[in-house]
Amino acid sequence: MGEILYHYTSLEVLKKILDFEKIRFTKMNSLNDRTEYEYGIKLLKDKITEFENNNKINNRFDSELLDKFSFLDELYSLSFTESGDKLSFWNSYYVDKMTPICIGFDSDKVFISDFIINRCIYDDPYPSMSKERYIWFKNIFDIKNILHISKNREYIQITFQTAHIKQKCFDIEKEWRAVSFGVKNSSLGTFNRGGKEVDYFDQPFNTESICEIIVGPSSQQDLNYQEVMSALSRKGLNKSVRKSTIPLVL
Image: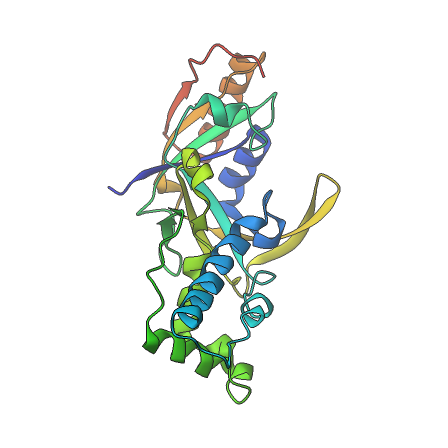
């Protein structure tokens, strides 16, 4: 069994997840704090500048190219946390206040292939820039190569790593992410979040990966619990379901 990871949501979304056996990825440029991804890019830019300063390089790399070719508008992500039944999450923007739900997944079984759920890295994971790496960056951003950068596998790998970097102040979230450029034949669409249109795709997943469902604190917790049990029964699923013991009415 892999790490047990939790996804906070609402009763309505849980029902859709169970009924359609799909889970939703959303565009990273619509994250509640879009500076998360920009922070990882800034760290790379700082390493490049540090190398140039230390080596007195005058013909400098145009680090703004990292912003232009960061793929922020193309990446989708799905978030999990190591923390199940935590007050900070029940009391956050992640959940519906009347029907809060937390789904626990076996991280090794969520997706059969193509998707990997990785732990987010808090603070700066990058070593000092080496001469070889600096030359590599300058080469792939050379005018004759830049049009092919989206096909450069090593650069794509850096892009995915950057998508898992967060500032140290967020480490209380203990977040994990699955990141994707989007998948052909997936259910693409948009929904409204706080007056903003958000792009998404719904990806099939393995319902056997669900380990437990926690019904969050609410004035209608007992009713929500019964709704969860009914939804599982309709799908013929036998899962552990428990009520949060946190004495909080959101």
